[in-house]
Image (cartoon, rainbow, N blue to C red; front, side, top):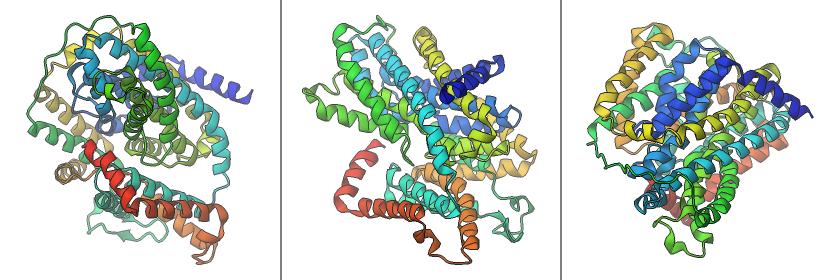
Length: 501
């Protein structure tokens, strides 16, 4: 009964004209960046982060969330029609979705992707509403030692599940932690690592790093690549899957939803990992694995459901524990801190309208996205013909204005440009930016809880292993490190993630 009352509160917040408008705006932007290759949800949210300064907290978070799960829907459109995944998690969608389009079943493929995504999104949001309150109650029992251990586990999980090289992921995490230490020490008031630059005494702004590493660097990376426009199929065909396609799709949708919902909660997991895992699962349990890659509906339905379910459940650790599981959730932390809202279990009690309004908006957003992705498919097809060289100046101007609006300081623009160049170099070296962002967000929080735990224990370092919950979390982190160090596991990880590039 309490859950029902909370959901009614959420819908009363989400159904206000202002919040409906921002939910629609987020869904449209998310679909747009999903459709256009070369622009992902992380760069877009990083660019739009300064806008949340002037928006109410609920409206800002609803819009950013809409961009995230909207990109999962939109990414399937280009993957199916032109074999260009607009979003990373849609890479697997190309394998069978585009083959269905080439076989004259483009409309059915788009419908399977959209309806599977809608089902997965609704179920995952229901799980978020059901499991978030009890998890938040558990989180209230956490002390500084437990939070420090949990963040250690989060960073280890992010390293283990990060795509690409393991040593590079560790290096990026450590660099993020170091960047988080720049600025004035909260306890002593002493300036650290500021090199005598007054603008660095307040630390390096999270939005500046995000916009540089993801926004500016993404523009440079895309500009150096030759545009490879594929002829778009004008014949979409019927949007209704036939009986055989439906029969083969719905079990995959259910399995993908379950798998994505579970993997989305993991640190470093999220939509990309879930879509790859779902495709592997469907192929392994299929009676006809040779059909995969040739237009099998299950190879499309499973990954599309999994990536949308994961996009929704990745909000669970953020809203209940205050721990971002991936780069997008790290940006959401930044949006919350802009409004002086501390992510974690206290959000549910101190800002119930934000917590439940955000959850309710996800159901509304999923419904909006079905409408945007099926009836308006012709519009998205036309947008695919817009050259990137026309888009990038507008994106660059928007980024620059957003950076300047943070503090009305040109120093921020130069700093963002520097991080943009660094981010471009990292992309050449195959270093992923997401672990750096997680390290930057979690670093100050880890340091604060580490020092607080030592103050409470009067300098006794054993407090982290004598408290049962803290010791358990550290034990899981150590187990993951040992597990990923095993040659067989490491080889399997490289097969799964490195080939993804």
